[in-house]
Length: 406
Image (cartoon, rainbow, N blue to C red; front, top):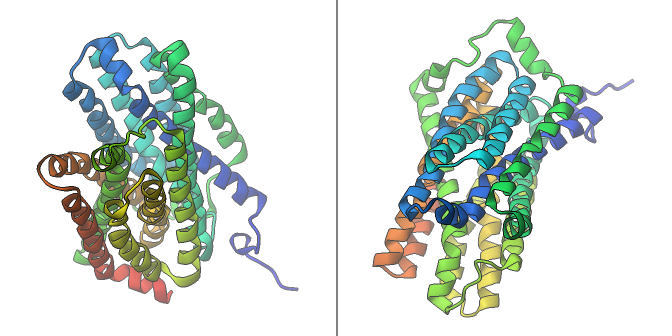
């Protein structure tokens, strides 16, 4: 009688479904909380009478919190467990969100968003490690891409809730909604257990959470640096599209669609379908070929923004661009989880992703400078070049070639 390893069943088991639902919801609610800032920023500026520069620092300090939380909780998740740390990070960013309701100065806003960033930054590595140790390698691309789609759903939820709550109850009440993820913790702690791979690693008392293992030799050091550079490009392209596209539309076509729910929904749908496609392509054809296809298409598709001559053609262009540039996002959790051993998996995921977030987020400043001093074509060329750069980096990471042969 033929037997199957529980990770290699033809269809997801009940436990695998629970893991996928929990981690998708966790990433989605985290992204919803982070996106609340985008929709409440103008209200915060008016409420506290601060400058745009002072308000812009809120996003910067949130990213710094994510970097700190990513490093700390990545190490803790490798030492004490993915499920346990996952639940703690959800509690931290939920409570920090609720505290925004009581903030009576811009300095308390800074403090509470820094704490929220710590929780949000720590969650990613625990989630991706939990999924990678629950699903087989041949299905991991689709699984991690599904989680990334959860993040896009969270962004859409933030837009909808902001439109409903802020005009009626004010921006503070929006953050009270952010405490709801605590309910998810009850589901996580009751329905999930630590993966077998983590339990085995703990019993063998390996060097869990040892940060130095990310740079233990030249090959591993370049692998860590190279993946961080790829994530920087990924985040830079995402913020370049989401933060500046409304301004590009207004400048190029005399349109203002920043408040258009159709634009937001269509762009998010394009990104979500791109993630789902990328996950399936990676599982079927391999890591390197999937990244080659999407990075080349990203480098070419950004030129559609310049070629668009009307509101609808620009809308279609952004859907196509979003499909390719954000389609790769879910793939990083899969490849990082496969490249690094169990004992430093969460540490690697959090360090690489949050370094990418912290540095890649500065792309908004670069693109703003290019828009002020040069033409839109220069902006597009800049975006195209960074995707070609990411492609070259990807091809130079020897560990990815070995995964293809495994």
